[in-house]
Image (cartoon, rainbow over all chains, first blue to last red):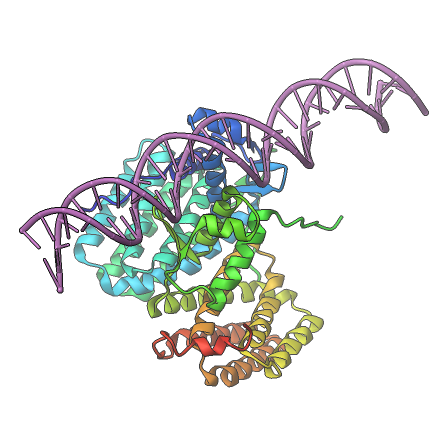
Length: 222
Length: 222
DNA sequence: AGTTTGAAAATTATCTATAATTTTGAAATC
DNA sequence: GATTTCAAAATTATAGATAATTTTCAAACT
């Protein structure tokens, strides 16, 4: 009897809105009007307000008192910030997960990498990528850490969908396989080092701006 | 124009409840009943529910659908988890803050350490300790990272108040001064290494069962 | 023409009321 | 005496309604 989640109404609303924000279906800065959302979901505004608060906690929305809530804007500085937080926390999680990783888990992670190879679009690729990262850190059994990582992945995915570059796919697949090889050899620290570089690399690429030019966004001070 | 804070009602309620949870005034596992809280604050259910959601996002409360919300229980495993997350994130923040730390900021941090020395009770000591940590990482200018660290500090303080050990004070004061010395010498990495050990050390100590013997610590403040 | 003013509309935040669910407690049963 | 049953009370979750604030937009003014 593992049935435990009826998925409460505010959770459902916030999940669907989060998907739209991450996919870019709702643009940064767009207003989220509670009554409009309420009628769309056939609900009242109370569960909608709670859904908004969840989105705010995830960093996907910002609320100004008496002025409503907007989709959070994200600039290049925040992308870099998220990448560095991910690197720090996923490395921590991997170090603890390492001793508990089984052969079966690593095989499943390899399946995820293969699914990334064969993904038809960015969305499918992102799903496979997130599955890989989740699989290798979950055995750390640190719920608070995993929840924080999940939120950061959402922010990362937002950036991924907004500015996607074709060279990402090849690079990440190579990194994923290198991480798996290290883990199979029992070299957790080596895997953690690759993971840290791998995650931070997301924020290290020059990105097309709205004007069409490119701009380096990653300048780590020594 | 400076950022005005009207402090909205749900924020006020959640802040006060958070203080009570952190201080141990409300015990882990205790039910938070929305009607009771509502009448206490002279408010209705709706702002109270939003305050509860805020507490849940901070990890201070857990909500079971249709069963209400309870003060989050915290065991030794979670204390260790929080300590390790703090170490990872505060080190990251300190590395970025390092180049922007001024002499004046370090002096202020030293004031905080002195205030810790002269604190009359645990509560005052905790406030000074948190001030020190906040001062040396704030110049990193990474809002999401700083917010995450703040939440982790709240969880740490909860543990501090529930099971306080007299040897903490001496040890942390020594560490704080070592961190400041390294920063004054421009050795950010050295400071970061001390900080990592310093923060993790909190979760490394064996702990007395925090059932009844911890409450007298709190009788000081009432 | 561009800016300012002010009333109407839209929206947020809160309160009161209602339906649904869970908890409680005592009587009935084994 | 312990357990089960079942109705009453308490509590949660949502809906509907109201007050307060902000936004909009067109007319008046410089």
